[in-house]
Length: 188
Image (cartoon, rainbow, N blue to C red):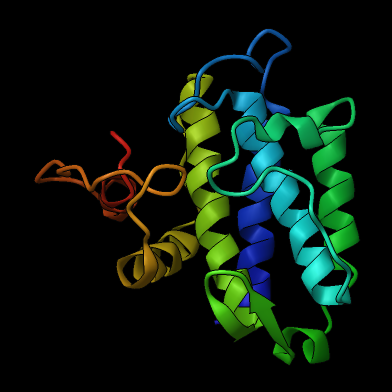
């Protein structure tokens, strides 16, 4: 499996859902406690900017990470346009050499940047569903990304405010997407 290809497909899915948000839906509540749809979009934009900073070695201190009160503050105008610009700026920096380079992350330590891309696959597919669910869309996530996200989550999910909620029971007949979402505290 090529993690960068998988990450690109997860980002494409997020882009599609974000493009479907109507003008009157940006302030709708999301599945993330105290975050609107705009806040969830801002969080993923923050993630792209943080990824670019890790790749370039630049310092990045803008609010929007896990536990931020209102990540929408990172949005410059239209959320979809801001997302696409942040995605492009990050992606252009992600060469094989950069992805192999160790990066120091507060609270995690030193890891290869590629390990953070796997974390971002999880963040992206989860928040794709969060926004889709908030706007009433039936979101079918990229199956391979769901598998990777579920595996990552079972090893690494942090259960505390601003991260992931408590695991919820999944229906007996739940598919992998529904089981992953329930594991991360969502009611699929």
